[in-house]
Length: 114
Length: 137
Image (spheres, rainbow over the protein chains, first blue to last red):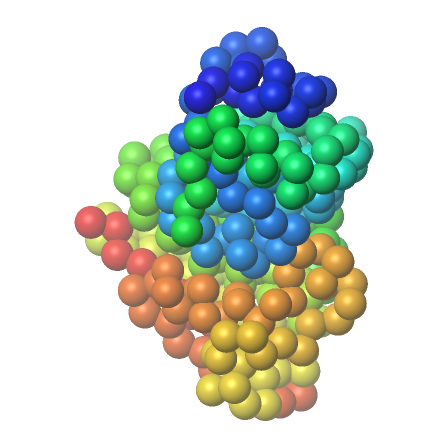
């Protein structure tokens, strides 16, 4: 699925360039615990998290995650935007809960890792 | 190639910057992405540990055509029981570290999973040295 569709399904606000909306995702992982994210071996995973801080982005960078959705209305800060841009990571804000956002994407065909 | 990075205690906003720089070096060296991910995940976990638990330390990275050796040397409280620290779920992390999304007692076990070889030496009241080796070929 293209990120463009993910954005529409979750009514998300995007921080990144237009071209990144063409990113393809097959798998998603939802967690507020970055220690868990760092154990994921699957490549090209869409990360859903409510942890809006620099460390969630560093975790994404180390885990080769290039698409991150912040759920529960968490706001992306300027330093997060800067780090994301530096590493080619697309950021999204979504007002839905983690459960709702994950459920919508699962129903639409995005696969779980485990 | 040899690199050194200073890691400050409690500096969570910069935790991961050394791992980020190593990642860029490995990309330039055309190391495959799966191996890069193993290396930087292990290094990042160890870097966060230095920020979270020590009084500060240094990361020494040596890259050859065959392998990368990462040594994280810190001064600090040390690890009283390394076997216990290696158990999944065991953690002495502060609430601040947990708020950052860490401190679930998964760091050291995850470093071991991603490394080809892991050595930990620690002296209580002095500091800890973590040596991570990953083959590049």
